[in-house]
Amino acid sequence: MQIDLFAGLAVRDRTTAAHWYERLMGAPASFEPNDNELVWTLGDHAHLYVEVRPTDAGHSLVTLFVADLDGFLASAASRALEPVSLETYDNGVRKALFHDPDGNEVGVGGAGQD
Image (tube, rainbow, N blue to C red):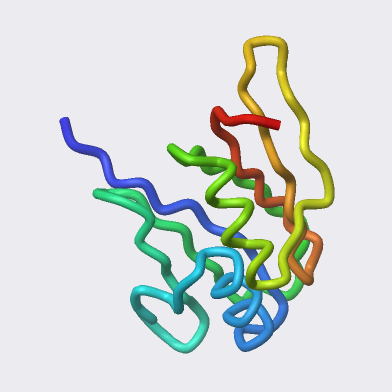
């Protein structure tokens, strides 16, 4: 069975969200299905979207795993985005937390060197 994943985050303002997520992802949205949504294709059958839902904004959370966490963090830093925290679990997996302008939590995890 094939499953496509669309993970969504509620935001207040589409333009503000577009700019921030472009900096985090390193690219503009992959497509814009309507005036209230932006979608980034992260891999085969995996998508992250933001949707304008002002009353729900700031209450979303999602975690992405990347093959090269250090590379992701360096790339985000080159676009002036730094995580608010970086945690290393006992099994060596690391997780960086970012907060978008609305306060949504975007975790990015993976293996890598401290």
